[in-house]
Image 1 (cartoon, rainbow, N blue to C red):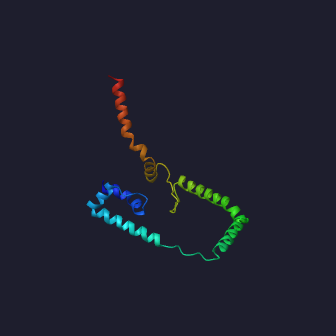
Image 2 (cartoon, rainbow, N blue to C red; image 1 turned 90 degrees about the vertical axis):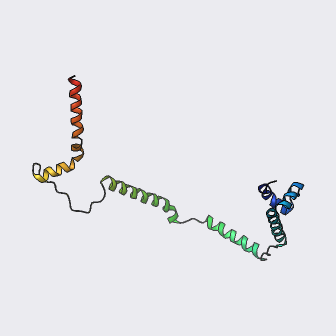
Image 3 (tube, rainbow, N blue to C red; image 1 turned 180 degrees about the horizontal axis):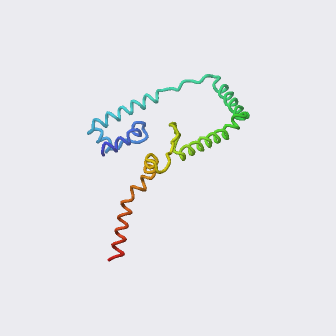
Length: 157
């Protein structure tokens, strides 16, 4: 037998639930580690057999039953107006937080700086602001030119 197989059987062997077979006995003679572990298990089982549980107080059952009655009475009592209102109040607060969060997110966050003033179109500042607002569109003009060249080539072969 292998050591792993013996280790699985050790609790039963130490407690006396299983009999020691000749194979197990031979392995224990050959393997000192397994024999030492089995002896340690047997010592532990002997100590557990000698252990005695402490005696309970004579009034333990009486106090325990009284405590159970108290807990049952507490469970039967109405919880009060706050317990009744707590669920809907928490749900309403969560809904308000969600609405505020979505509103702030959709508006691009909370701005703390001065308001943005737009200049009149046709002025230098107005043109720069227009370029800044439409930079995505202007960045794609090269692609539009490439599309125009391709369409000219396919139209005039």
